[in-house]
Image 1 (cartoon, rainbow, N blue to C red):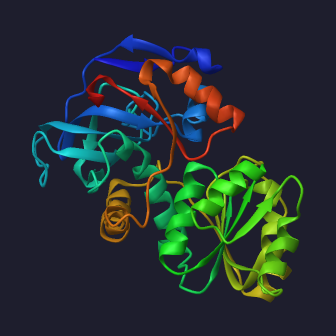
Image 2 (image 1 turned 90 degrees about the vertical axis):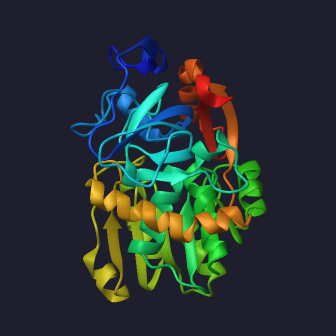
Amino acid sequence: MHAITIPEPGGPEALVWAEVPDPVPGEGEVLVDVAATAVNRADLLQRQGFYPPPPGAPVYPGLECSGRVAAVGPGATGWAVGDEVCALLAGGGYAEKVAVPAGQLLPVPNGVDVVTAAALPEVAATVWSNVFMVAHLRPGETLLVHGGASGIGTMAIQLGKAVGARVAVTAGSPDKLARCAELGADVLIDYREQDFVQEVRKATGGAGADVILDIIGAKYLERNVEALAVNGRLAVIGLQGGRKAELNLGALLAKRAAVTATSLRGRPLAEKAAIVAAVREHVWPLVAAGAVRPVVDRVLPMTAAAEAHRVLEDSTHVGKVLLTGPSAS
């Protein structure tokens, strides 16, 4: 088969479409002919040499995919050759085929085509596990989403609204904020022109956000705690603004607030399977009903992975950037 390889870390030009050995499904795995994959910021870090795949994972980038089952390995149940699926991966999505633990597979939701389904697994699993399984967002609460126009952000807006929360977002342009509003965001904050702490307080009568989903990390830590309501929960899932910052424990104590930080890629298989099962139970019916939809900025051929990486680096996109393989049709 062919896959996007990274012979040497570097810029987008480091991505090379090359012939590689075919994967063989192991115990409990299913082989998928890849129709499409999606580009995530973790892929950019891996390309630069900063985020290697966990032990045993494919070395090629790609944290999610969609396609059709090509073979079922020993001990894998619940799937048959020809099934249209999408999957959460530890790596390997930028390829013509990938072997996936059966517990990380999902059926393509009703009403979604097999290519577009590649936009769903990583964002659905990330948002559901952090906003709902960890931070326990409830109806009537306020959710603040940083990077509202990103793949994660567009999913978080829709899921927050679907459960009856009020959603505030930050984004870097009026156009991106307009797209967030179309998805249901209630409070629109241009982080280049406005202070999100003040804007959230203004929108909540001084109370603050009950849950904050943060992709920035260190740069926003102090202000995120300021923006939290009493009993608020801050979920950190990205480090685009750095790794280290001081945390005022007094402010956290006064608010009886919590800070959590999670990643998805390196979790044990059982934890990933539990998250995927929860997504199938809670998110997939919303997708099938049209209450939640994948947001796709553009679709490029997998051989144009370098161009897709440049799009993410320029942050001009809204939602997901997809790459299609030969099995797309």
